[in-house]
Length: 381
Ligand SMILES: *Cc1c(COP(=O)(O)O)cnc(C)c1O
Image (cartoon, rainbow, N blue to C red; front, side):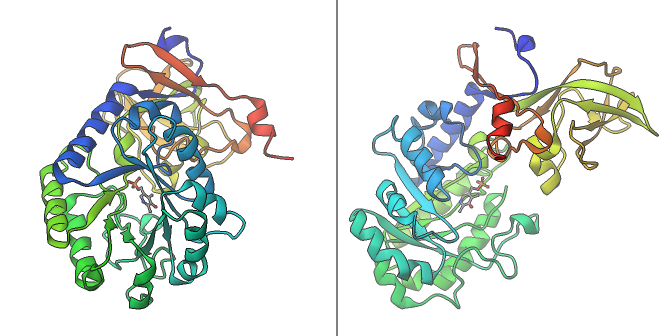
């Protein structure tokens, strides 16, 4: 099968690139002794889980459905896989099922911990219990992605923490990073240790959350390994990392086609995809996705505003320049579109969801899923 014969739009995840990331993460596990689990919130393409599960120790889930996905699709490849389930608040009608299929449960507040710890232990005596801490320090690039911002609802602050909770927990979690380097982890860890290490005595583990940009070029992997080693030796605790983005970072693209081109003060190209529905972080963050063969507006000879195929005025990917004029039918390839994209997609405006494709290690292409009208209709009545 030829790439050019697949109907656009589609996401194409490249197995070889995914495996490169997994190998680097595994190197961190091996050298540091930390356990790394996949945050399903960022990447949950379970047709790759045979590969992912051969390197990572399990999954981190944000609630019942992600926990079920981990149970159904990750554990089937790896019996000993760990499922860690966290939610800002668990619901009484879901907690039992969550307890049954999770190996670890992470509560957001002392209220939730006290409300549920007996119930979950009764259902699953082996479950390990943790409390999410808000370390109240972060250098997150954007407020929307800052779990430690003012009035944050995520995690327990030192003020809300009580030593008496310790008899109910096996570990503590924090998650304070977003696409960040090891210096930021070090700063967060410094404050976290200063405030909470007096309570480490009877714990088994600390979970350092996600947001570690480990697979990004230039990330100081050796320093991360060193930090984890020092931490583990100092406190004799296990360490978990739970990256989402770093697992699927730069592992593939979103391929779309130009549907129309016209002028309105500048050249505008309408694509068969959507920033709003298929690349939501480009609008939420916002950030500019790289387009293969393009440069910033004005740098190359022909500049276009690339826009989506919905009626939202702001459904715009950005302004890009190309060496040659775009033509209807030309493929536009947005790079690095495998994490935080199709886990968030919507059928807004009834536009077609991009197909899911895997470029296998042997060079073959596998269309994992194609979507249609029913995927739109079924959620509306
Ligand atoms: C989102 C999230 C992660 C994963 O974050 P990445 O930035 O994708 O690495 C891990 N842990 C928690 C609690 C999260 O909310």
